[in-house]
Length: 261
Image 1 (cartoon, rainbow, N blue to C red):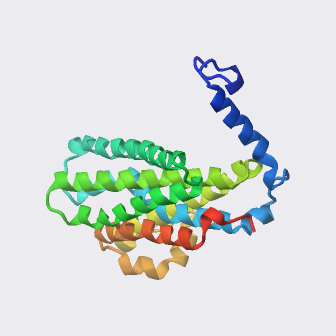
Image 2: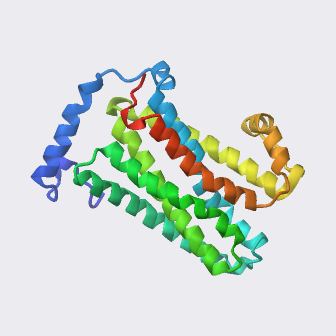
């Protein structure tokens, strides 16, 4: 309320910025003024590529938010009072979010396309994620925390860029609806991760609660039985693969050139 002003009312906006905003608004109709129907959304190659990309990769950040302190306590025997050290993870997430957007912005400013620039940054992030198995394997706790911070930094730099891809590629008249559909894929990925890790940690005693849990338990039953009671280490290995697989899928699917059909 103190600082926000509409662009046309702001005293801080430059003329170049004002022209850029106006040009963006004028370009809204280039792909048609009619919002996408639900049929068009759910048959869109672009939507499915981005949805699957977030479904595969968002669980990495969910794990560090909800499971990493428990991992440090139960697997690393870190006392409850010392879990405040996880502030490092959230600091790395904040820096990664800012750095990911800044770096792709620099590439765009040098003449790269928006989608192409973001994919380059995402490739660099995907190259760092295979460090994740080392988190569970190194003996030194401080080194494990440094590795975790690097993985989280890369994960959030990726997340900020795949989210920006949605804004870059989806017409503004359908952006809100498409963004929510893709975010639902992220949530589903988080649910799968939660059940998978819970089964790894707690073994066969974990029982599904609710419709989605029951569906996932049924669909992924053989996988859950395979990893039950295996501990955290398999999940750190899985995390190493998710971003590289997602990047290959997005690149081979030519997400930067995909349309709604």
